[in-house]
Length: 140
Image (tube, rainbow, N blue to C red; front, top):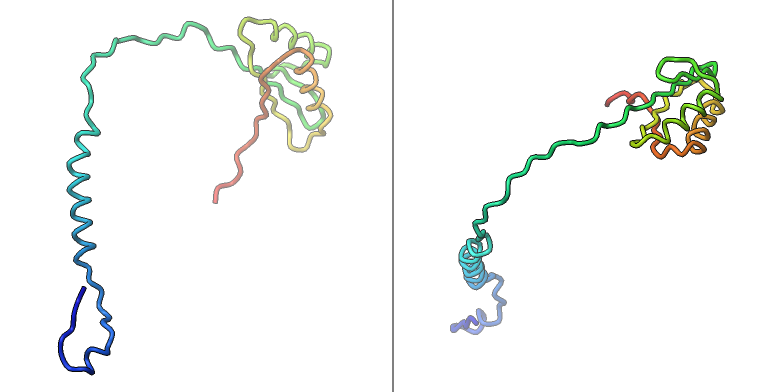
């Protein structure tokens, strides 16, 4: 606490300066505490971990690409298929040990009905992974 001894007019004035010495003292103490405690917190126990290689044991299933043209024609990996043939092939694919992912490529100008038929056939066959392939938009 500061005291001002002097003439009466000076004693009535408020001291407008901030004493930053205690603040600097506290910050230096905190800095020293952190510098001391950081090496203790980073201490690591030396352990030799076992070595193991990870080899994939299963083959990844192929992706089934179904395409729908503007006219509504359905393609199974570039081969034209009917709705009945599509359902038969999807049931066969769903019963495989590792189920493939169905990727649907629909033309932007095609109707929703042929694409909806494909999604319904996939659901009825028990296919769990269905994806829609789109083109990325313009950047910027």
